[in-house]
Image 1 (cartoon, helix red, strand yellow):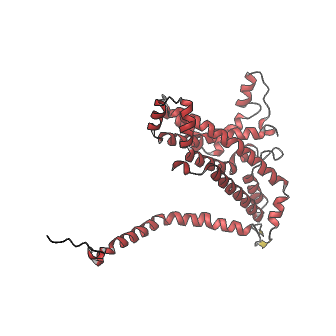
Image 2: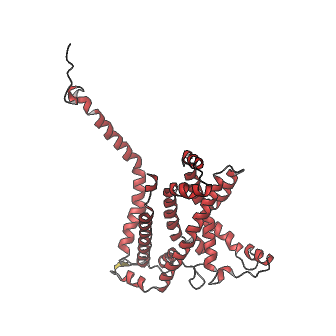
Image 3: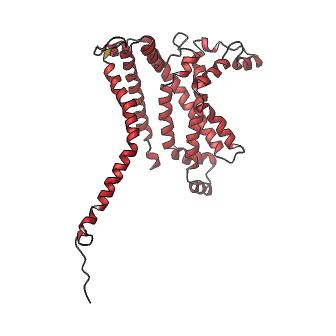
Length: 313
């Protein structure tokens, strides 16, 4: 019998020119991939990268738009430390985020659980709940401006029907922030619900069948299966919600204009005032960097606590 000779190298089987074909194919795919992402990269460079670098540079200058920037060192950041209004804005933004994010996430999860069941008219409910998310924030704020009207608003009309005297919601230092928080919760539920609903529909049903066979109740299944499996979605919803809450501007601008007595002023609103009312562009850039640093810190802390998206692995 003739012995079969096994070649020691691939080049003994495949001719030389053919060995370069996979490499050429790989390079062509890389070039095609770069061409496809080039518009997005260019967009990010022009509208994110360059403004970010400009904000960092201008934060160390005194710049009022009308005259050339003048280097000021750390003066803007020193002024921030002693700025009582900005410290109040940081506190208000933190309070707003603390209440709107967890409450809206909890309500959105409960609604998603209900819509994930065999509920009649689910599509109508999903649409109705999601509409505030895609409605212009200014339009939403105008509707709530009427709801909070102390004389003819819906909120005080309901309280009057119940025999209670309604407050002057948006002109009271005690009620203005809760009123803004309610608007933030109401408007933010739709997107969170949609994300949770998509995550619930992707969960493996065999795990729940096995848990039912083992005698686990619905409550036990929720805390032992649903909550851990939703960890990646919860992380994403939390991070995006915190970023959105820290960037809240339209509601405050329309409803309260930061008042009364700075009780509802937010960080983004103070940045807007510094830049476009007082024309302190360098100071506004320094405020923006503080906002960016806070968001980055909160994201990293939450990732460390929750483990980020490792729950999906």
